[in-house]
Image 1 (cartoon, rainbow, N blue to C red):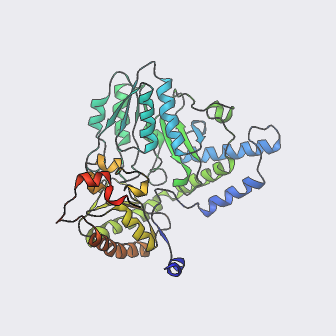
Image 2: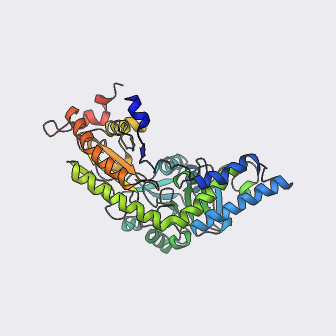
Image 3: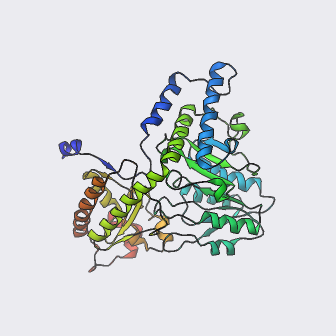
Length: 412
């Protein structure tokens, strides 16, 4: 077994979780550690060189988003950018109102921040989604109030890949009140579909480096010029007094390069991924009985293939795929470190029992047609074997009570 695993080519299909760092990106980063090591706040040559590097790469990130360089603020992650957008906008505008609107399928960086803001006295509306994971612009329109100060809806969902109608929703919000701020979490969208802040009309937008073949630990928040947002960290004068802490210069260099490549490769990247994604979806639905696609059939990220398989647990699928050399992910209980089924799948209206049998395969730049063929070939037998071992089947329909508490599989 060990021998076999060591020689087998790994097929990495969890690019929504993180991506490998592009070799071109690594090349940009390495000299920053050892040669261009100055602190950008310092006045002497080493400091000026570092400052120049930061600004050149800020311009690259801005260019990839259709923004001005002075509207891009580097953060430690997409999560920090989400926190800053919500807390910063809410707290700064609370004299005008205390109502915030978001959706039920946001990333936890948004949902948990919204819950924190509720503790601070803000009133949050969580918009539902349809069975495909789409927020209805009509629902948003109905939810808007005179005291609504902020709306935050993700551009594309990380679990099921559904792309949200952001541009249309921004128009609705701005028509209702031009001063109501609109934020979108574009962490999954950036590098996979066009993301242009001017075209979208948003005030705030979050991105992350490690989803676009850049390093981890670097993100950015686009703050449209003139948008009233409070700082959430206190310290030095970095990032034009907006985000203290010595700049992560090496990662900024990597992020800039990754953004530049993402912009340049977008059309071919999208086309490549879409083709392979459609092949994968078709293959899985045809070869695995009682399987279903989750998320929107057309309006979905080019690299996202997400499924539900009845009568089995996502965790079992992942472990079996791993042994076969395939890395995937699931919204299922054990693997996500939580007993609850995915909030996204529940929001799509799936019962908890079925939501446990989820699998998300997210493709990347390096994914090949052979990879997809191999995955399709492996998945059918894996699911069949797990179902044969499972206490759940047509004859023994899912007992919701047992299932929701996850008792039968938590005796590790």
